[in-house]
Length: 411
Image (cartoon, rainbow, N blue to C red; front, side, top):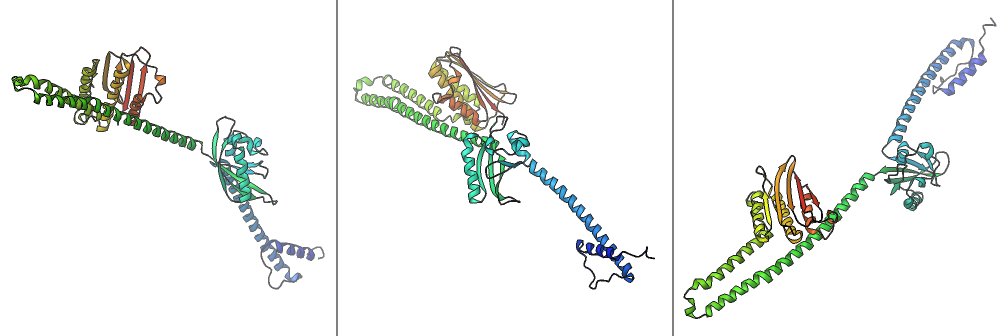
């Protein structure tokens, strides 16, 4: 019997050890450790054992869930579009995600414990120092732009947001820094700014050209048409003072005045057409160009020919006016500068658009010198073509003539 006697002290210790590990409260009146209470004590220990096993399972499940969440957020931290680094007060990289390492093109082992300034363009070192100082002093989120120098050699422009953070184990303030690659955005912005500057320069050149054209028109009206009209007025006044016997054949006296008036009228009509080609909107473009080329041949004595399209072309009014102006400007430049004897103008449809060709056998020029303020006519033609979504190609060489090719895509 003594061999079967329970070890009451051991059972009491087990019960006392099990109670604080569980959140199960003992009964209001604890049972004394006596042989009579032994079955009930065993029952209580089994209940506590089951509760401990259930809590152990919950702890294992929580640990597994926590591990999965940790892996998930680690992946999010490493592969987020933004680069993240944690800096010490001395500016050393304490932590870095894979995205930042990809930005700088360096393995993570070679990034940690290095100054962030090693990966920043030297011209931005002062900005980086000021940015970190502001984050430490103001204790709020600070932003700036920095240029990174990766191993690839291609500079990256990043938007940086930094905020101070306390270390979990010691009272040291670190900087948590997020970097977003905005290189493409900056390049696009620079292109927009360059386009805006180009538009401003073009607008200034066009205003200059308009002023110059107004001066030429004013000079033409004053020095040519006004003087010719004044001469006609004086001649008509002289006719009134002649002797009656000199009017035996009035046609002889009035016909020269009529001829001069007809010539003046034709010149005024030509000037009006140059200022605003209204006939372009009322007839087909090929008819308007054919008429202009024929008139150009008469005015300049240059052998000018026009070759129309193989089939009728339908253009919007704005395109017709722009193409007409391109031909007008091209032929005027040839007359002024090319010293050409023959000119040909042709327009026709191609596979995916319209092609306008203007060729001359003049003295030619070096196309490399075209981009500049001294070639306003060519610049104006190129801008008209670009406004229609097309392009201008110049083929020319000194003493070899010139070919201007305008391609306008189908709308």
